[in-house]
Amino acid sequence: MKEKEKVDVKVLIMGSGPAGVSAAIYTARARLETVVLTGPSLGGRISLASAIDNYPGAPENPSGNDLMGKFIMQAERFGATLDYDTAIKVNLQQRPFIVETEGKIYSAENLIITTGSRSVPMSVPGEKELVGFGVSYCATCDAFFYKDMPVAVIGGNNEAVDEALFLTKFASKVTIIHRADKLRADKIRLEKAEASPKIEYMMNTSVLEVLGKDKVTGLIVKDLQTEETKELPFDAVFVFIGQKPVSELYEGQLEMEKGLIKVDERMHTNIPGVYAAGESVDGIYKQVAVSVGSGVMAAMSLSKDLA
Image 1 (tube, helix red, strand yellow):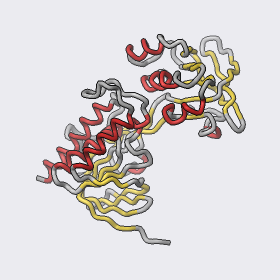
Image 2 (image 1 turned 180 degrees about the vertical axis):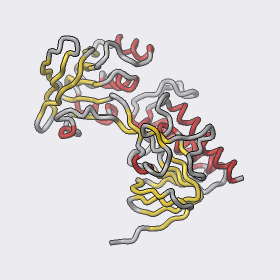
Image 3 (image 1 turned 90 degrees about the vertical axis):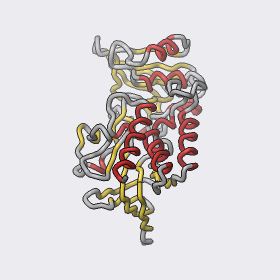
Image 4 (image 1 turned 90 degrees about the horizontal axis):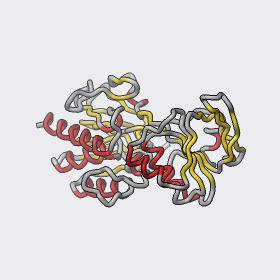
């Protein structure tokens, strides 16, 4: 078995979403050798968004991929290096910190953690088995495959409504299914959804099972008011019920609460030299602008601590 390459680095940033790349812009600009571990998704979860209409200075409503492309271009212009790899093991009990990836072993003098969050599954029968065969957590990735077909969107948050609107460009009908009696999305999103003739709603409804053998054929749902269950035909199910922090690598090493890394007002963790930002620490706002700000704070705190 080939021995992994060992790399020493001044600043290692784990995660390539808005927080991580913003931090990289600042550390690289401060002439600190910076490597960004991209993780499995370059640009983070936001790169999957079909359109972003609330990021300051971007009135053209760019896709998440386009916006993150500009972030990354700026970080690389200042000298940051991207490593298209994923961390599999982290040792924070010594400094330099050891971060093992699928291809390398990094020895990092300083670490900024911005590994963000992942989609929460419904955890109902049939869901796991049909991921990639009609069950999806990314409308931007998979909407094209369901042109002129009826699809379901599960969830009532901003992401669910955004992706439902995107799906109307392809699907024949989009049914939003939500457990509560009203959606939790912003008013402007709700107005857009209500104006679409392709979007229908099933409120006070939960999903009991995803149906299908080799592909999704429908859902079994339950009316939470009447207790009635019924089977509905769908060709795809897009799940947007929330996100969960990606923090398993740091459990038992960093102070955490509900999967979120605890930081002080300057983004320090309980271990000197380790900083965290973005949705690794934020369980409330979950906005690009907020993640950018916290990433910048982490980078500036690191630079000032070194000085």
